[in-house]
Length: 205
Image (cartoon, rainbow, N blue to C red; front, side):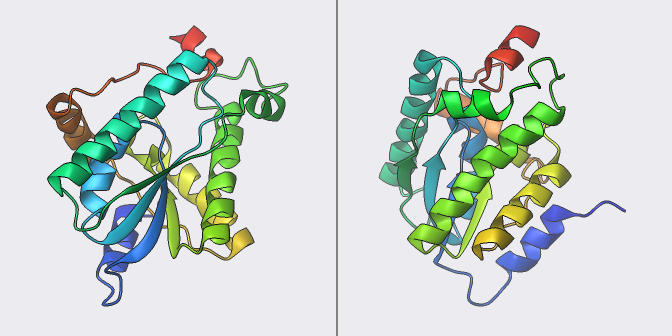
């Protein structure tokens, strides 16, 4: 029986003491984060963690970081969210990604290699959340129609249990979240890439 992660999120957002809690959001890119920030920014004090060692090209990596910062600056300038959004850039470690997925280079998109990649990024988000005293952490990855929300939530929950920081459940594509992210991308003229970031995904495209 599948779990309704949007319903689980709704239940948490209705808690009486949720306002202003510190939330760390691992974000993969500005377009995917746009709706997530607009939505959760009315409940949480958010910090965006940009940690994506899977992005093979340094030029592509820097372009996505720049767009993420630009979107956050625009949201903050417009006071689009109830609380200002902070930004933290993790280390750019493509070698770590290649070491982690060694032997899975020929996996199809969405296969085991992607699961390893999700775990690599969410483990770092969980570690940072624990070290820095966040109340919750989550990821923007579940907004993509190509990403398995059940898989991501299971990985996130496991990482959270290891460091004793709860993973905020999500399926951000629900409630027209993905559609809204496209609208916001157009509104803010965001760069929308057509591959996840790794060379294997790029080659498959």
